[in-house]
Length: 244
Image (spheres, rainbow, N blue to C red):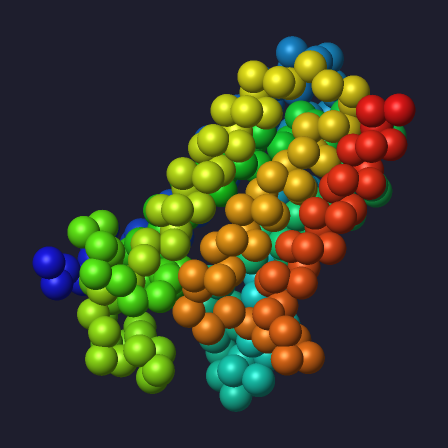
């Protein structure tokens, strides 16, 4: 079915973009879930820490995306702040959040474990926005669950194709499985949940990168693939140390 999802709806004369709405719901749900976990573990200054983690994570997510496609944004500088068009990288969000925790908290590993499930929940909900802005899709496919991508969102290489792999949905499913696994096996040495997240999520991303249309490149290599491989290695090393 050749159906193009709407980009926004109008409320009181304002355009409310579905992508922005999904991001807002994702942050709210992740926040509430994390607050509950933090209170159960007796952590203090919860709202203060989460405010800065969310803010710096958002800035990091946008900055990473802009730098990944810097030539485009150099030619279209006004689009750097047009977040309703899409373009929030989970890698940048994690980097921004980690740096914030290192600065704002003493028990960094404990906070990282508390935040990890909420981060995954936010990722699952936030990916819904990629359906509406048609930002994250895979290679052309004839499978029955392939999604229609309108011509203005296709790459020149695949302009003749109409239906593509719903990459955002694949990641949602993978993240749901990872989240359930971490919650079931949550009694791990402090810091282990975050390490397992780095390993499991990035293994998922390595597989998805080979299905993705035109991923960002760095020195002739797939940038996201390289970053994922590095993070998997870091996660394995850190997990081994935490287990000891």
